[in-house]
Image 1: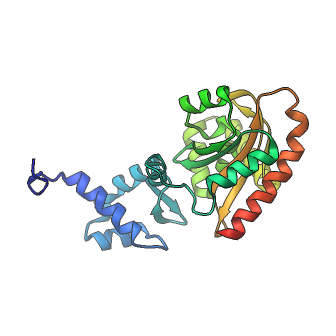
Image 2: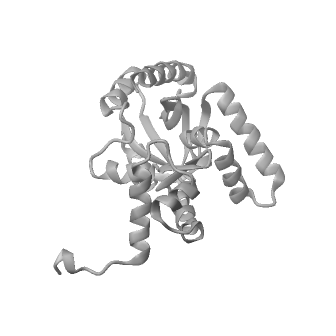
Image 3: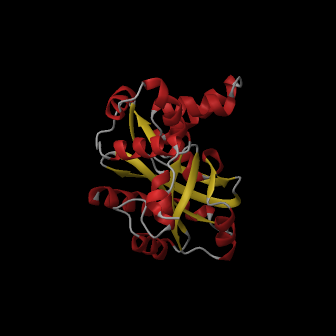
Length: 244
């Protein structure tokens, strides 16, 4: 069918307008400002915006909407990069220094998505191929990303995850505060890689956490190496932030 003769779909058109409008606003847009730009009632776009945030195609920061990380995942899978200031060669160099796999993850909605890695062996490759995307608490990198959500996003996530389980919610928020204070997660990675020990730290650009990088391994003796991994990661993350 000729492209010019293809029928439009009202919802698809509106979603495309939302994404294109937000893309053109580097400082983000409030919901009311977005409605004005689209010449549409707030009520007509509220549910669409909520859905785009839930799936990671928009991100809400201080009540302003920005393009979300899910867009970068599509770019990655077609040959792009999740963060402009972290290159694959950076991960390869970090792997050479650590002698262990290095993994880079970003947050998409309530999940951590591994977008690049270096030095993985066959067991790691097998797990990554099956679980590129995992709930935030299930990996070391995911917990770093969860801890560094905005307070509003973190409360929303905790409410959705724990419901009436107040004790679980409070324990998770306290753990997140500890991660932010210490600047890392260190120890067992989590359910996705239950035999793996890891250190994960945040990756920042312009003062914002945009990813998490981890050094992790499943081999005997890894526990004794975690201190060295931590030093390597902190140095690398600081170098990348200066570059951003």
